[in-house]
Length: 141
Image (cartoon, rainbow, N blue to C red):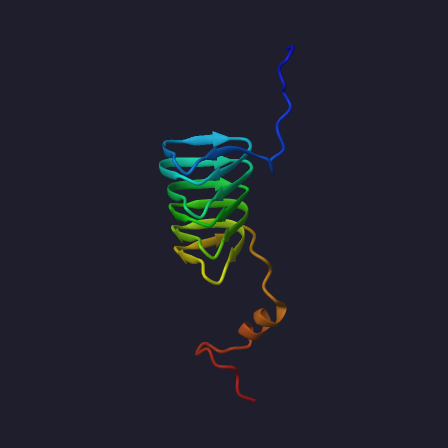
C-alpha cells in the first residue's frame, strides 16, 4: 500500500473541529480528539480521544470519550472513561458515567453521576456499622 499511512494519530491531537458557525446534527465517530465550538444536536459524538466543548458551544447529544472538558452547554448523557471536567462557564444537564469528576466553582451540573471504580470502604466505617443495634444507636455499656 504505497502512500497510505496505516499509523493512527496521537489521541491528544485535535483532529476534528466543529466550528462556531457550524450546526451538526447526527452521529460522529472518530479516533482522534474532537473540539466543538458550534451547535450539535441529536445523535452521539463518540471518540476514543478527548472531547472539548468550547465556551460558546451548545450540545444536545450523548457524548462518549476518554476525557471530556465542558466550557459550554451540554444536554445529554456523558460517558468519560477517564475524567469529566465542568469548567466555570460549563453547564451540564444529564446523567454521567465517569472515571473521575471535576466541577469548577462556577460550573453547573444537574443529573446523576456514577463513578466506574468504587473504592473499598474504610475499615472503621464497616466495624462501626456492625457495632450498632437494630435502632441504629451504638450499644450502651
